[in-house]
Image 1 (cartoon, chains in turn orange, yellow):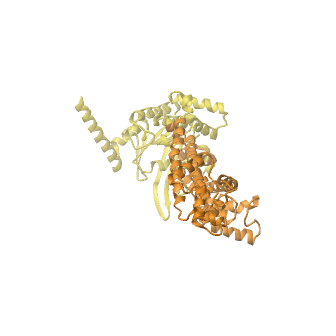
Image 2 (spheres, each protein chain N blue to C red; image 1 turned 90 degrees about the horizontal axis):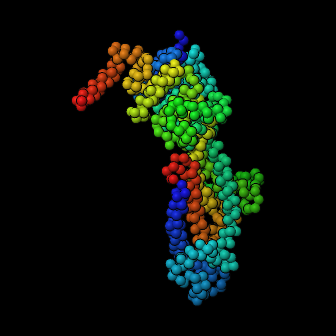
Image 3 (cartoon, rainbow over the protein chains, first blue to last red; image 1 turned 90 degrees about the vertical axis):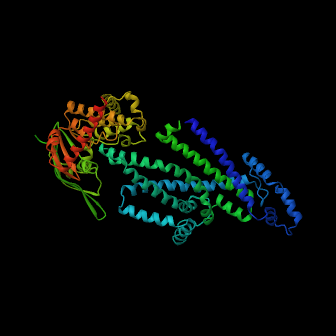
Length: 313
Length: 272
């Protein structure tokens, strides 16, 4: 088991290298010259060739591509992601650290909503398959999957904040501010998980172990919760693991709709300002999150399944 | 003598959408105390369906008519909860695929314990003791360790014996074996059949033994039903059926078997 975990961790190193490289290459392929952009943002009245060359030297853009990549990579390993082009008084790490908590708060709240709503609803849909509850839920799931989050966000804002005047439309800080964006982010995940859990449970209900549990005269409650639900959740674990980084990165659009002061808002403004170090660090961060959570939940699944545990040992 | 179980005019119909299919047609039979009734038939002939329908193990797509009297009480009229309480205690079953019948996520000990917990108010210690007794009786080596094992760590034969052990643990009035020898290898098959013979001799438990294997049924069954396409086509003792089969299908089954056995003996004879 230990060996398996160790192997899995080692295998992520080349993956992380590739991610960092691809992320660096893509950002550098952007056609506009960041030195020029930096000058413009700093409101330099006349942009001359000399001024551009000066800023290029200042930002280290005149060095060869690979040299820049390697030095950036080593700096990243030390936790130094560089300095914002647009606002040289701020470090990238500082900017990310400033915005990360708000995004984590939003993603965390969404995850809690996803788990709290999708498991019981998926469970009930499976138990009362083809009943009224199941049919209504399936229709809702179908509708909400088809609606893009930014539109849902706007609809909710219009209805709940403006028409009913219950919650603030945008901004951050209080719990009331969190509700609408968290719900918007989680909505499509809730639908996905309701479907996943419902189908998994229905699939499990056909298994021999359920028939045998009935043959042994176990109460329905025990069969449904202890056996069917646990077996169904099991296949959801990896999906949930992958949903966490998706939730963190997926807040971009919703954060902008609700002006939530998180990573997504930072990222979008950096994209508009051509603030490369921040975009780079953001893309890298999300990539690393995907790898780390994938690893974590793979290991978790292996630990929680007696069959895999043995093979992995 | 009152029969343990008496089915009269039992029919099972499956309705999917607008299609209706009759899986069991107007079947009547009885099992008497201490007797082992064999039900013989090929796959899909409605053997398992017959017993599952009486125990309330079919979902709402199946409609069941007729009567299934268990000591005079009609099982088909009982509430779900009453039936559940009877299953696993008064009427127990041994199923076909031991490898997939246990939940892969729980230890054997846990799954045995939950069965006892559903039917008795035994303390955890008592449950543990009884589980060990069962495993010992079924000749499982290192019973203490076996309780801690997950299903995938045990062989099909062992799981099958645990299933049989669990089925007789609470002294049922009727034991139903649904093709218990189909999914396991020939050597283990013999052990499993011996286990059933032993139960029959020791506890005098009434049994229904479902199989498509004439050899297996010949060993344990006192009386035979032959089912074909949802209908009972022949009934009698093994030798009676062997020599006086009424139905064309039964005759075919016996002929085939005799042909196979004849060929088998020929080959063996040639070798000696």
